[in-house]
Image (cartoon, one colour):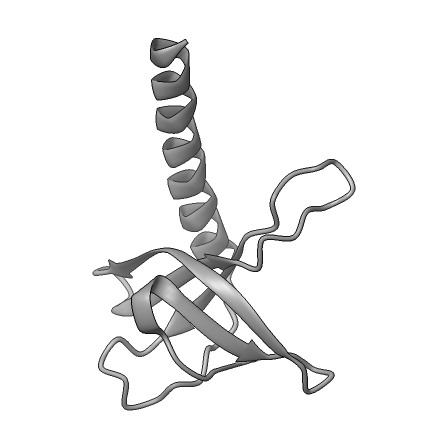
Length: 99
């Protein structure tokens, strides 16, 4: 997939079928260990369990290269999954406090 634009935490991707897909950027972060920058986003669709689908890619925060690159290592995926789990725990805790 290729990143087309990123205004106001939204990016438009062109999928394998040539269709534009608008996604919400959930967050970005840098990994100082491997010097990569990551973007985590959703197209707001759900899987068969009703969970929102979330995607992650390597990106160039300088904007010089707008191509999103795939994450291929298990170590990188584990890092992203840990961050997502931590965020979900915080959201769940806040929802419990508000109810």
